[in-house]
Amino acid sequence: MKKIVILISGRGSNMQALLQAQLPCTIAAVISNRASAEGLSFAAAQGIPTAVISHQDYPTRADFDVALAKVIDQYQADFVILAGFMRILTPEFVSHYCGRLVNIHPSLLPAYTGLHTHARALQDDIKIHGCTVHFVTADLDHGPIIIQAAVPVLCDDTEDVLSERVLLEEHRVYPQAVRWLCDGEVSLIEGKVKFCHQKQASFALISPGLE
Ligand code: GRF
Image 1 (cartoon, rainbow, N blue to C red):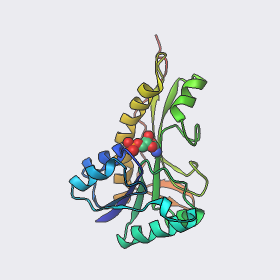
Image 2 (cartoon, rainbow, N blue to C red; image 1 turned 180 degrees about the vertical axis):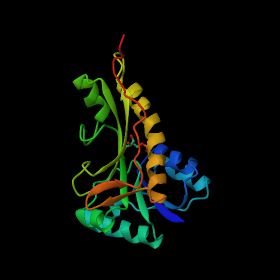
Image 3 (cartoon, rainbow, N blue to C red; image 1 turned 120 degrees about the vertical axis):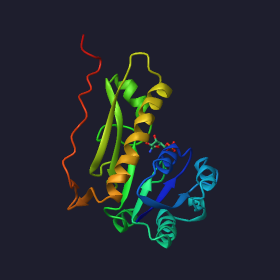
Image 4 (cartoon, rainbow, N blue to C red; image 1 turned 45 degrees about the vertical axis):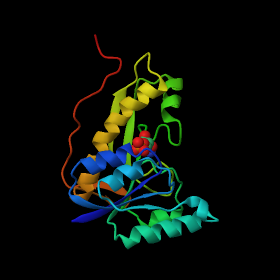
């Protein structure tokens, strides 16, 4: 059975969705860079080993990443799952986990890389928004895409309402992506995402809807 380590920094709702999805893998540990991350207590209550490696304890980003990798590797993780882990990782860290490091981002990449994706989407008055699970590369939020979910942006949406709509889809697609990884259904080969079987899209989303 594959082993995964999940990295969080805060609330941990995606981590919670992963823990509740009965994935075909062992969740070896949940690690946070913040001791106050709310998700840690949920993981601990499920009997998952937890660890805190505070970035504030290290003089440089590189030092922190080395310490983090050392702990992850003690768990012999096959995959490292970033679930709201709010740290930019060094190219050395990313390359150490090439093809084994995935992230979820709250936008339809390559649109809206970085922070405040929902506010920026509303500002631009776009009609379709969403989330993306992707392999992590040194190019922030630009790694090869595994799965995306699209949601409509409605005319009276606030940032909170839109973010909640996207988050519901995050909780559906992230467990699916990790399941594919653990089952060997999807992998990163020569920088491209390869599926063992052709996955068909569910349906078209048209927003606003047709009359
Ligand atoms: C999610 O929106 C995720 O896409 C982004 O950070 C947020 C984390 O939320 N990377 P949670 O901690 O999983 O609840």
